[in-house]
Image (cartoon, rainbow, N blue to C red):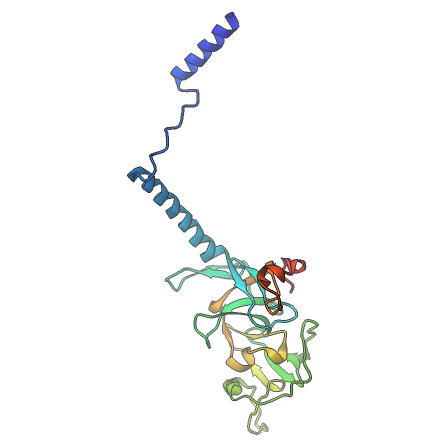
Length: 257
């Protein structure tokens, strides 16, 4: 009994000194003004966190074309690291610096000039100051053939000229002996890449609309580097509800280079 009284006295003293946990006030009645205020505050904080997360840290991207096959497949859902290359500050011309610069071979998501509002994913093959050319579908950088084990070729598609490639003319290496420049998909250049510009190609070379046709990519238009495939399914599968019935769980994991 004495031990019980001492315990009660200790609790009483703690209550008086403010050391014990006080009971939380009851939640406000549903649909009251205080209830709506609590929900509004919670949603506001969640929206701020979401905007910061999406604007500066990560983005999502879905592969909808076969231009990067077999590295990235139609139906791959990607997480994009926006911190690596730096993030633009919304509604301003400012940019938070990244911790690295684009390198040869990097797969990068960027905003397309030729199609405003569209994000595209390609592989970086040319950096500022590089000289690029292609002969018979083989890419040469600064005079040396580039080893590209990731490239997918379809030799059944014949090479052809494209008037869109005329943009290359002002960037050609000067050559007095050159006749009229008529670039084709597999034969073009040599061109010199200007400062703050990058040359991007798709891995599926015969099925990629890339820098060969619409030009260089500005550094400030680069949004980030894909680093993880968080979901994948075969969009062309002849099954009901392919999003669930044609899943490709084996592709979930780090994004291939």
